[in-house]
Structures are given as C-alpha cells and as structure tokens.
Length: 68
Image (cartoon, rainbow, N blue to C red; front, side, top):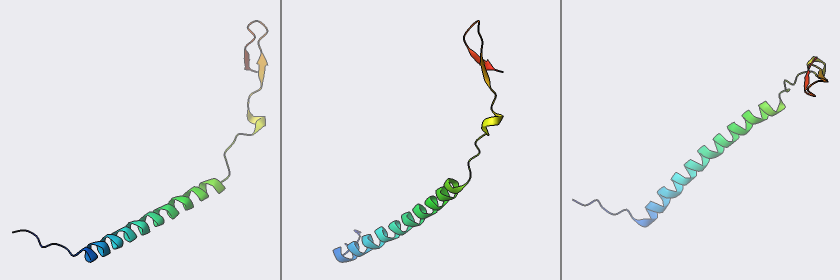
C-alpha cells in the first residue's frame, strides 16, 4: 500500500518550521559559546612576573646562554 502524497504547501510549511527550529538552536548555542569565550577573554592572564624568570648568562667557552 503506497503512502499518500503530501501536498506541496504542507511540505513547504513543515520544511520552514524545521529550518526555523534549527536556526533557533544554532543561535542559542552561538550565544552560549560567545558568552563563554567573553568570560575567558576578560579573565586576567597568568603570566609570570619578569623578576621571577631566571637570568641568563653567556658561557664564554661555548657561547651558549645558561641560567645564572
């Protein structure tokens, strides 16, 4: 027994509703991800202080810089 054909207007309407639902989910996810990225962007960075880094001194024999 073959399935009855769906009238084109109903098929177009169901397609439009489906596309609108997908677009709504995509926009919601897009905003969630951007909010999460904004939180990370506004957070202070954990860069070490310049004073805490070891000083390098050149080895006169090899010419290689080594920690002091």
